Image (cartoon, rainbow, N blue to C red):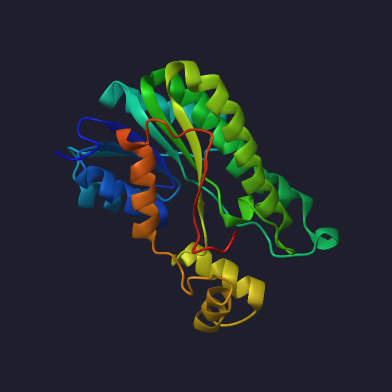
Length: 252
């Protein structure tokens, strides 16, 4: 039996990257998964790969509260409850100095990361079993700052504040709430950030970022998924209000 046998997990940003790697591992460990994302084609392909008996997909923008409510309703109708929320959806915003940063992009970035995570916690936890787990994907930049990415850095710090508040609030129900802090991870999302930040082609940009990581390489989505599995499973029953780093020492 897998460590998530009989559990139900909702994963946002579940159609690709860290979200889908986690969904695949969760299913392997016995869970059923509800994938929420924006790309309907990728979501359908993800469900086909995972198996329609193990997975469900919903298209929803996490910054849209009514869309989140409807997705949760569909998931509860199918599975009856949730045991795990993995709030993983995100965007990168612009790479620009503060004086040149578009205010609408700044607001949109916070809306997806912070308001989106808030919506997910608000609407899933009433349907979550006591003793469940909430995981919010922050970032290495939720623990340290970088110039040129003010919205993304602020949003990732904001998720930590939300987590710390929620961890205290849900402790009486034994629901753990933690943030996961990946360093640079080998995904198209990260490739795009690195190329825009450095102005270099993908491989050169990745090498520049590798040089910032004490362990000398990018993390893989599967490595992040294994960290998420630990936080989702009963093995982390006494872990809450934690900033769980998997960044190769970058924030050390």
